[in-house]
Image (cartoon, rainbow over all chains, first blue to last red):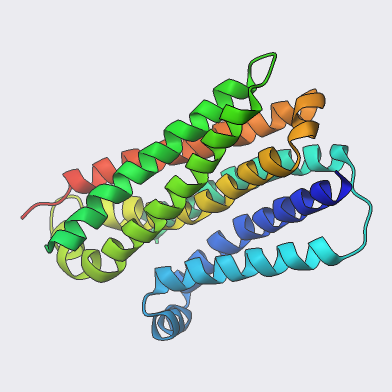
Length: 106
Length: 152
């Protein structure tokens, strides 16, 4: 049970990291054409690159946290679930807000 | 549009809807007093597989066809915001869904006992399902708006 909770907590934290990474690289690539060009040149398409990098980050953070020795409690998992929900909503807001700003106001 | 691309377009919608409905099922089943973990796990697995399949099929269509064949029609028409705002938001917000679905899957399959015994954890997992389904519905509605903005 403890190993399972540790894995679940690792996955939760990794998903929160992805919720920060996706809007960050999205906005950065729109503001910095060189980054978008690098993503396209490296991964065939900028959106494909963002997806692949998200997977890599998720997998690496999950693996790293799974193997780090630390104490895990159900209360932490519960708290992280709420943080993940809020992070996802914040990520959606950031992405929508940026493209609305870019098209209508910039 | 080739048959493969047509199938990719259609199936990305179907897989996405399967995922949304499945995770809505998880959310509703979590609300009951006695949890049917067998069905909750099945629906969470379908939710994850649905989003992964939608990612692959939709991603293939988007990265190989949309940019050259569909985007110019939208950008050149009366609803250019449909690409600049709706499509751009949709394609990036979607990237969150497989990871959210994976978390739901992982919690139910690796910490199912905690979900049954801990009411707070169960409630917050229900909230995450609600958020994921909500984002999925937003994506689906965005797809309808984008399709409607294509003028040949």
